[in-house]
Structure formats: structure tokens, C-alpha cells
Length: 615
Image 1 (cartoon, one colour):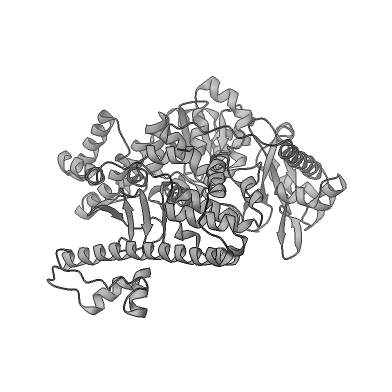
Image 2 (tube, rainbow, N blue to C red; image 1 turned 180 degrees about the horizontal axis):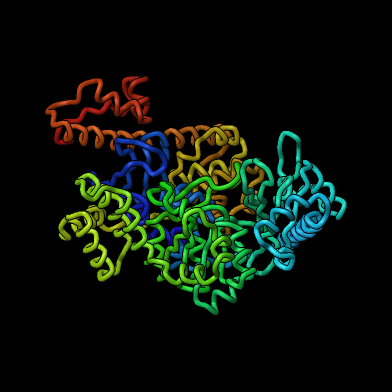
């Protein structure tokens, strides 16, 4: 059993997915509204028996626990594997880079350092006058500007690229560092006409940049895109400077912007850091725990009340530029979850209306100290915010409060803490604690009733056979490129297929794989196949692909039958649904399309007929 298989064998897919959506029992499976698209009729199905998931609606895709985390958290395979390995208690092997890779990374760091130096020089010159005036209005002194190496980028498409090229950096290196981007004009400067903030990693190396527009250009703030050096979701601005103060004070204060951090440090509050233009991410929470268990979120009053932060349920959002990867953003439930799991005390300090941290600090430093000291636990803040947003004199308002707050309380495992907030919620909603407790535990009972998880298999045999065919027979490349990756439900085989499509040479595929998959890959390459020539290989591949399609259709038929039975239960109609009602369900599923096109699916699956009792 390799590391990937061991991780899957130790985790229950229903438990992992249940942290993101509320699953309800549906026969031998669990179902929920799909977390990847909006829908009214649940089309997202989890099979504890197979340890797999599938969306039979708009997504029309599925997979295992790793592929779910990849899609839900916006992660690549290695990131998702590391996250799940931590949950499963599996120690992954250390990755070792080659001397060539180390040298290439050092060149990227050198390019960033050179760019930071040039931007800093430009700020001091005539071109940077407007940016200097802005910094002066914000109250920054020259010593602080020098300490943070603030800079300015010329409003020119090629100035930075031309300057850095004269210093010996290639266009490829500048693209790799994120200083240049490809566009209709070819490779051009990413940052133009902006105030520039170098972003250091924990070792004090320039890993990327943030840049603020000096006019009405959008976006107002622009970050370096994802690069080998810069990971926005795993970076905290000024942590390299703040780490000692955070340890000394046993507290980290997280604010929203670069200027907020710099102003705080200038006035002696050196335990202040910033997120990268998004809500706090799960990796940032984990990073902070290395330094302190007391984390205060100093939120602007306007942002703290926005629907995205207060009522948002999505964990993955697009953050930053169009070429950035999605960042896993911790919503309120996520904050509570990490507070519980990581034993971190997360508290919220709300600033006065219309005030930034530097406004508060410059006006009265003691007020800032009091705000941070009086920060409230996440659940206290969240309950007060939720209750003030509804009419508690109205039954509907009280019901909305319960719906809004109870899912957050579901993340609390400490029985004393849970009882405290159930009591408070009971008083506010005028609902008995027993009724609230029953609502709170119902999803958990449904998940447990599905039975204990089966040990994950060593991989799907048909998927492995199909992949071995592709790896060992170059004649199949055209057919393989046209095969959807979503036909593979196992994250291992799907990841290898994706890389196989990207690289024409098998050795290049192996080099691109994470270390955890190299042994698995070797097994697929060396597997003995009962195939003697290209014709037999093509026939075997076509048969495998057809069988994988049939598997998907059978699963969709099963899910559709469950949906029809549920709808019949809701409307209380005996006998079959009428044609129009069945069509509404069928038309949104892949198998429904097959049924309506052919009257029966290609693999011989008959159109669904379901009675009221679901038999």
C-alpha cells in the first residue's frame, strides 16, 4: 500500500465531505445539494461503500476523497494530498529537489530582489512623486518607507522587463517569477504605474509583490500570480518581521491591507500581519499556530458585515487576478472548525465605522490596544452579528437565526462550550435546547447510519488497466487525448492522466509527478498486458472507455431513481410520476439525456420507472 492508498484507507469520505456540506441518508448513499453549483434538487451523491462521490447535475463529474478536496479547495494534487495526510496522520516523504531546480529557484529570487531594488529607486525619483505624496498623506515616514523597501513601477508595458534583461535575466525567468505576463502584446510588465510592496517569505527573501493603482485602474490591488516562490493562500504579509513580536506577545493580529500593517509597525505594534487580499485561508491559520494560539482578526466595520463574510458558504473563491489560482478561504464555519481542531483562540475586533487600523492607531494608540484586548471569540461575535441582522420579535427571524448560527455550532466538539452557546441560542430564538440539540446532531446521525467506511482499494482495476494501455502504447495517444479525465474517479489515475495529456514523453510524465505517485506510476508502466499489437491495444482501450462510461451511466441512473422517489414522497402521488415531472429530473442528468435521445442508454440501461416506495 503506497502513501496515497494509506491516506484513503484511514479517512471516511463521508466525514471529510460532511465538513463542507450537510449530507442526508438516501438508501445506501448520502446526498446533498452540490457544493460546486447552485441547485434546488440534490444531485450530489456520496457512497461510503465505494468511498466515492459524484455530481449527477451540472458538474457531471465525481471521484474519491482526494479529487473532492482538490476541486473544493482549489488545490493541486500534492497540496490536497498533504492536507489529507495531516488529517489521516500519515507522514509523507520529504521532497528533494535537484541541483538544477535549486539553481532555477535562486535565479527567481534574484530577479525579484533586483526588481524590488529598481522599484525602490523609482519611488525616490521624479516618476515616483505621486506615490510619495500618497505615502506622506497616509502618515508614513522615510524610515518606514526604507525599511519596507516600498517602490513604484513605471506606467510602461516593457520598462521593467527591459531593465531586468539588461541585468542578465531571461524573459523565461522573469515570467517564472511573475514579473512579466504573457498577453496580446507578448510578454509585458505585470505591474505598471503602481505603488509596489515587496512581499518577503519567512526567510526574508522577496517572493512576490503587491501593487496599488495610483488612479482608477482595476483591480485596485494586484498581487504576483502563483509562482514557484509565491503562494498567496499560504503567505502572510510581514510575517518575517512580525514573528519575533508575535512569539513575545503570544498574539498575532491579522488586518486586511499592506498599509495597515506598515502603519502599525511604524507605531510600534509589530505583531501585526496581513492576509493577501482575501479572507483568511486555512493554510494561513495553520502557519500562525506555529507562533501563537491567540489570533485576532481586526476587521473593517464595513467588510465585517458583508454577506460574503457573514453568510458565505463557499470555501473556494477566485481571489486576485484572472491568472491566479483559486484560494481556499476560511468562512465562519471554517474559522470555528480550525479553532476547535487546531486549538487556536480566534477572536474578532471590529474597527469603528469608516476607520482603518492606521486611522485608529494614529488617532489614539491606546484605543487600538483596547480594541485588540477586547476582541471577542468568533462564536460570540458571530452570534451577536447574526441576531442583530434579523427581527427576533418575528418567528421567521428567529428561524433564520437558528439556520444561520446552528451550522457554526456543529463544528464545536467541546460539550461545555457547545452547551453554553445552545443555551444562548435557545434564549434568543425562543426554542428549546433539546429541539436545537436534535437539529444539531441530525446530520451526524445520518452520516453514522451509513455504516463504517470500507478500506480503500489499491486503485480501480479498470482505470489502472486503461492508464497502463495509454502509458505503454503510443499509438493510443490520439484516442487518449479525447477521453475526459472525469471518467476516472480515482485521484491517482486521474492525476497521471492529466499529466500524460500534458507531456508527450513518458519520462516527462514521471518527472512531473509528485514523489508519492512515482512508485504507483512505475507499477503501471511495468504492468504486463495481454496486448500484442496496436490493433488489440485500440480495441482494449475502446472497451475500457465504454465500460467507464457505462459505470457513470449506471451510477447516474441510481441517483436519478432516488431523486424521483424523493419527489414522489414530497408530492404524495401514488404510481409513476407523469411525463413532464420525470422529464424535469431526467433532463438535468447525463443518463436523462441518453434516455431522451435513444429511449434507452447505449449500455442497455432501461429508462427509469420508479414507484412511490422507491422499488
